[in-house]
Length: 185
Length: 334
Image (cartoon, rainbow over all chains, first blue to last red; front, side):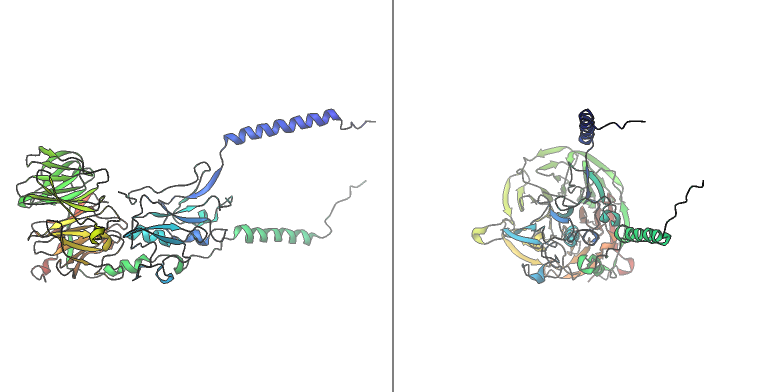
């Protein structure tokens, strides 16, 4: 007749040591393997609008940015104003952005600074497209990592027609503008 | 003794559970039925691009491919010769569009002008170099300042006009490089707004009468100045919804005069080449529409040669594209 061995104090210490060893090994491996986050390459982006509609978040974690060393600080900013806008004003009827997320601030005559209110921005890229064609191409989209929940399979990446999305190292989570369209003085 | 066989009491429940899990997976994870962005979320460029889908009296008749790295600028010299400035060299083309000479330069000139005596003036990013007709460097003018970005140059007798997009001003130098006047500069004390330059494009041109015309790209028009810097006249044509206007933040990017005194312009964004009456600013006709050029870029330069051909430097092809009046339209110039 066999006797069942009791779980004694020695077994407890052995188990604890094994757990600690496993944890330490996991931690060591984890330090070596860097995590990744989803990001879109603005140089591949075609401003299709799906970043707004295909994100699981509402509003989308994709937001517009303005690269100031490329921006012309234009009075007649096509990223801000409706194409046929007669007045270069701040009225809702003059603004291109569907959520009025682009803010215009006077610098000196006749130059204006354009900032994005990220709480309002839905990442539709209307302003990005307009600035690309009619301006200096200083507006571009980025996935804000402080908003993104980093889904295993990003639904925007799946729907992106220009293959602009990829997983990038978490230590370098943003991709800035490059390329011949981004000319600056 | 026979082992008892374990059977599910309700096999239909198992089937139902599997189906429910499958359905849940499909609806929660497998279904990608996101709405497509509607018209309110997209920018409809095509509406504006279609404005230039009109019949023109011009056609593309040829291509000159210079054997140069990064061709940047064009000029017409004495004898109707075409000068093309590229990286570390300038190539000169004769009447039949073949290269007849070249000389080396030190770097990439952004703009070029040739005087009647064959002296070549090269505008680099921050300074001007003078090259004799034998290709030898005669003078290297000092850097203008760290902010300078020279984009256009023209010579009229003893005056050399240089456009500086970085400082938003046009300089008048003598041929030795002494500064004689600053043109188009902002002067708040006299309520002069100055030339508005939001991007690195600022062009100027001299017509046959020696009038200096300078683009005000931010105002989408042209200004005529006297040699002392005082303004004579101006006209502006901002419009993205009409072909006769200049679209975008800052156009036209390049200008030149035809042999009959018409103003030829090129624009960036929706790249178009058009003809205007320079005095009134009235739009006359389209030479080439945006379908013929890469979108979102600018042409590098534009000149009109002795044969009244419009030559444009296309950055994608690194070549000079030639536009001419269609043969059956010769002589019907308005």
